[in-house]
Length: 348
Figure 1: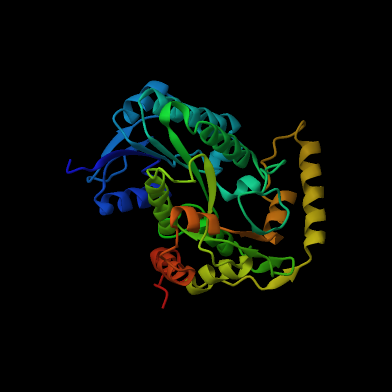
Figure 2: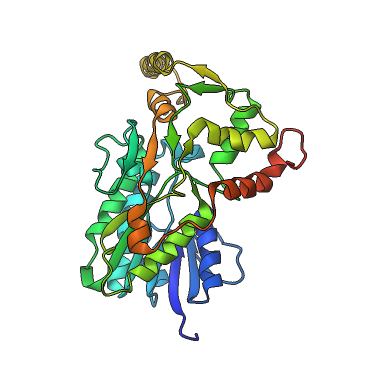
C-alpha cells in the first residue's frame, strides 16, 4: 500500500463524490473505496454498492478505514422533494449509522458534508461566520435533516477516539452539476428566467465543486494534527467571491444562448401572490389532487435574500484557499454544458 491510508467516500458516485474521489486518488495518499447505492463506474477505486440505512452494510464498508468522507445525501430533487421519510432515513439515520460504524470499527477521522443552508431561514445573511445559530425554521425539510445530521456528527467528536468535522459548502456548481444548471436551463426554455425578483442586488456565495472537494482533503489532513482546532467544528466553504445572485444565473444562461434575467418585479407583490397560491392549494388539497407548487413564499424569500458567508475560519484552521476562481469555474461549467445550449452549438 506504500503508506497510503484507506478511506471511504459515501456518495462517491455522485456530483461532489466523484470530484472528491478523483482528488483523493490524484493525491497518492489514499486507497479509496466508494460506498453508494449505484456503481461509481470508476475502475481506479473499489466500489461497494450498498445502503446507508443498513448498518451491517455500512460497518462492512467502514472496516479498516482510517478516514471516512460522508458525502452521501438524499437531496430534495425529483420525487425526493416530498419524500420526508427517505430524507430522514438517509440523512439522519444513515448519518447515525456512519457514526456508529466509525466508532465500532475504530475509524480515526470523519469528514461530513453539511450545507451552508443550516443557518439560513430566508432572511439576509451578510458576512456570517460559524458562530451563527442554526436556523430556527429551516428553509425546507431537507435542510432540517442536514441540521440534525451535522449535530450528530459534531456531538460524536471524541467518541472512542473519533475526530469529526463538518463542512458547509454554499451553492455548489461545476461540471456534471445535476441540479443548478439543468434546472435553470429547463426554466429558461419555458421562458421563466427573464425576470428578477426584487432589486437584483442580493449577493450569494457560490462554490466550485472542485474547491469543495479540496476542502474535504484539507479537513481530513487537519484532523491528524495534535494541535488542530478543527475537531468537532463546522466550517463554511465558499469561493470567497460573492456574486449577484441573478447576475450569476445570467452568466451561465447567456453563453448558452438563453435570456439573461433582466426585468425586475417587486418582491413584496410576488411574495403576496405566492402566499395566496399556497393558501389556495392548501384549501383545495382535501377535495382534489394538486401537485405541490414550486411557487412558494420561501422560494421568493430565497430569490431575493443575501447569502454571504465568511469562510476565513476554514482558511485559517484548515489551510483552505480555493484553487479555482469563480470566473474560471463558470467557463468550465458552461463549456461542459454546451450540449444544453439553445442553438445546439458550443458556446464561444
